[in-house]
Image (cartoon, rainbow, N blue to C red; front, side, top):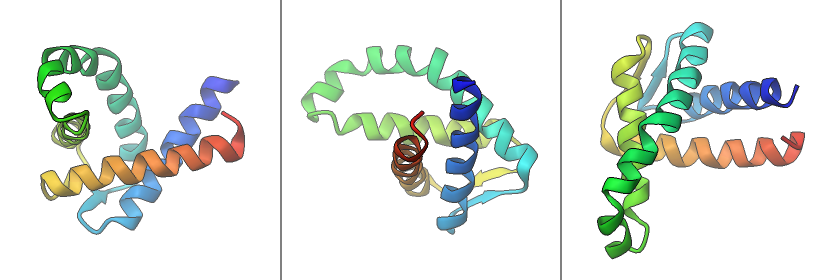
Length: 112
């Protein structure tokens, strides 16, 4: 049950983030669900490898490079998923920040 709740929270967070930001476009519910699935898989398999490989840069920048990693992975999702477009790197960075904030708020509200 908790997994389904977290999945629904992610769907809502992606939809709200794309609605708030004019540089992000989602074509519909199907692409929103696909974005959540692909983003989850990329965060599960690709992100740990990228974080490990870029650890020295992340340490030198006092962790700020982690935001760049998140933005690049979101941008990768926009390349993979049809119906999900991001205009550029800065919009991907803003999307990842807004998505994280909305997800944090929804997690606290629903206790996920």
